[in-house]
Image (cartoon, rainbow, N blue to C red; front, side):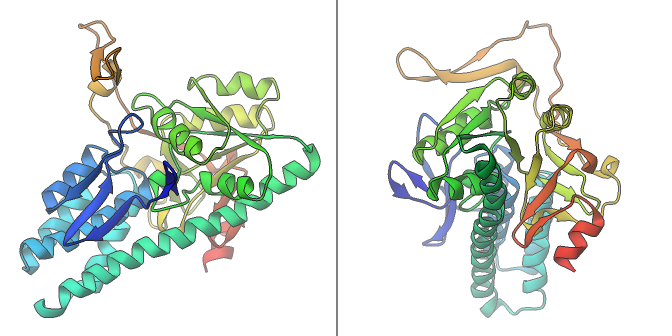
Length: 356
């Protein structure tokens, strides 16, 4: 997709470095950063310079390429894989990508391993682009159906950033929106700011603006009243891990949007590539929910009057805070799953019909 009219991907490999768009600098500064080592990769994932389940999976894949460039040793490679998986525990794509890379590289001699690693990491990225594009084509059908009945602008509510900045290109939740816009269907997006890191305000609104798609940032708790007033036609969100029974783990606050949507008869769809499906975990209580630094809640960052980035404390100094990064939306609140293979019911039977 585009930034200032130029097409970009979120990550690519060039001259033995991994290039990323540093998303901690957006929306006020656009910075392309070089990732040179496994440690750099882990830090980029932990510090959310890259974020979004598909993108951190791809980043970890290239992290293993950097591991081989650093030290072409099987023990070092295995240690690197373990540390990459541990860098952020909730998004399943991270482990999926590392496991896929390690399976591909197992038993390969040192002369060929680098080439194979680069090729496999490139394939993961190419697949993600294709999957996200197909998610958009499939999700477009839902938006078209609503538009054919309404004959007016479709108001879509989304949470966090499941846009192209969270993938390699297109995004998951935003892909149907981009496809609808390209087809000439009038859309408007309600963008949850998504505290505490404001990925909706900082990233989703930013990328929609770059594609000239009308959008309005709202506080995280405003979605319910907008639905009550008939201002939301459909909710589309992404997911960091979806269980085979259809339960969805996504950015904290997603569950509350699903409850509000159910109460107001607003369709609530989840967009995801198959790499985000966790076929093994049977109970959502077993999903590790990342708890991040309380400083993300207690401090905010923005531009001052001199256009300098500043971070300030907004809580009382003695106050404690808890910063859970994700929550679980049970399948019963999900209208359907939009995948690269089609749209299905949020259930084991629904997923099996598409993927088995």
